[in-house]
Image (cartoon, rainbow, N blue to C red):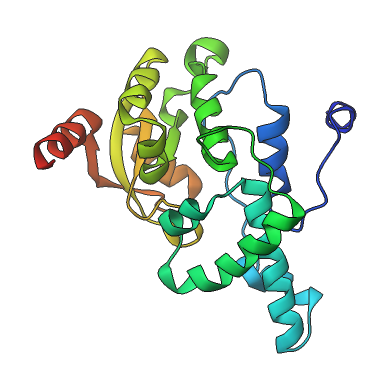
Length: 228
């Protein structure tokens, strides 16, 4: 795997998001939407992970700005993405980071979608039914996409694609959306049955989704059309 990646120019020299950029650039053959491992508990999240790199306020600000620049470059973000995905109080420093990133070069691999959205689009496009492919336990089959991202890609297409690989599409509220891009407004998920939510929550040892919040995607689409 490493040799293959290096043959495709390897990882970019970025502080943050290099794997996302690599996936968008190199691509993959297929995806099996399945929960396959429990998350590793990391001491410190976000900026606290980088505490070893700086001492004092100035170094903290420099490191934070460098991470923001790398985020914009690796995710291929546009100005509209900053507005759509981030809190208003972050916009001013992100605009500063965007100007720097523009001079350094922003990596984009799709005309309409940023790399984060492009990767999720390709994951669903190239997904196969893991129950048929590897006889996976259907209780742990899961595809998820934040609603904001799904809206950009196309809700109807996502609905059809999930059904094409034997998954039922729902709109659910995610409970750990604090550090996730665009997921606090809910996620579109694909599962074999809604009972899988409880099994996945139990397996991960924390509540990823709120089962009572899940509604069939058709109902959400119909409500949106009526509201508009």
